[in-house]
Image 1 (cartoon, rainbow, N blue to C red):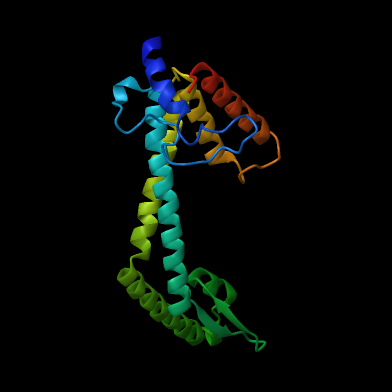
Image 2: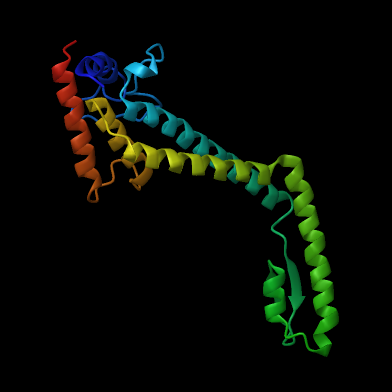
Length: 214
């Protein structure tokens, strides 16, 4: 891409909300905040920014689906409870187990345990059936699958972004934004290397603003 293309992209990039701050200002994270305007055709944009746009959409969709599946899981737990079975051990202790494997590990399946194990397995199967029915009604597993698919797509796009050469300051900032969004434990994390990456990003913002006066 020629310099003229980058010059066309950069004013829109720098004037976006994400890049509106100075070096010392906290940069707001917003979808497509420093990508080109929606009216601008992709062929005039930095290829890294184009991939970044797609990654941000996939990243945000993954987070939305994650929140949705967590809400649905809480609903299942509150109304049905995680599938389980409770048994009484030989010493009189009662234990609650959440898998058939755990059940069989606890019982040594001696002659006196066969009937107890069969009853516990039946109880577990009945509880699992109630969970499955409620799951189908509210769409928990379907949402979880959709979340996994969105996460896989986001990871593929993140890899593509890292392999796409940037042709402008906007493209470099896009890569730094993705690095921060994906890797930073919390916004404004003080541990190395996050302050240094944020500082480099803000330097690029400042340089871009100086090159494109209002």
